[in-house]
Length: 344
Image (cartoon, rainbow, N blue to C red; front, top):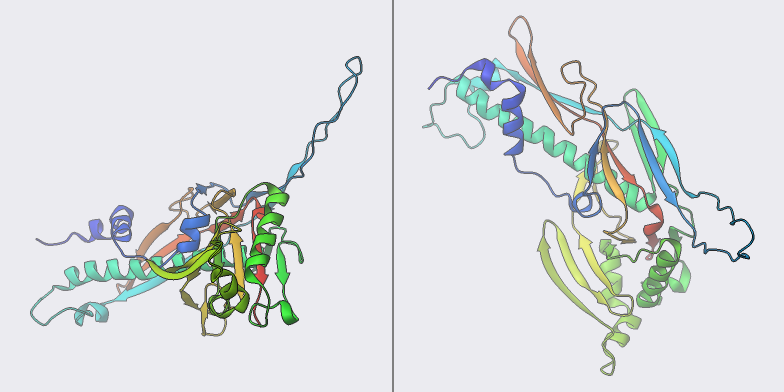
């Protein structure tokens, strides 16, 4: 059956092809930024909660009530990042065999165009998903976002403080130099609970951190204590690039490693999503959100996580497929997260 070109390239058909394509790993986004909200505006208001453990004051019954000042958050209006990437399809692309296509398939140029459409959309979608995952990692591990590219250079600060949300061990306190990971994690967990009342549920470890924990003499000594069940170190592959490393019972903390990399467009080098020398204490109960701003395309002008569009040059030399998105991970309760550089 012949394929109708108008049907093949309309936005609805492209969306269907997009949903059926496989996606890369996005453990951080799916674990800590599960809530999604779209906005039909160019700017997005980010609420960052900062609360204290204040208690009610006493007063005599005949007196007027104590006046309580409202507190709890501050709002920052920011423009989300904007992603707009496109791929051309030229006649030459439709006349040669696609990867995986055998010489016996005998695909017509239009059928080959349909396959190429799905592959191109999948590649553009994969690139956006990886960017979103890198943005989530940057927000979680640094408390900031640096949105930089042609015509854009903005920074968003979620309020991490050095020595509070971000700690750097040194000397003999380093985990690969005699420090005590179990005591550190227990102390940091207590600090987070004191700060915001939320207990961390995950400890995400970099590659060098995992190795330091396994080889740490303090951890080995405590785990070998048969009188008390202090914890367990036992690797288990959970899929999607995630490994369960073990549990520290005193802090009720499960340890995970996340094996995923990306190619940094700034220098073309492959880099880990999780910094190798760092551990993140995080909670799935903390308020976070994956925000998406307005799609700034006259053919859309709507709130959406993605918008595909296509057009053809008048002389028929090429057709372009474009995918747009305006993602912004939002750490509403930044106090529920803590990062530490623990190995040299």
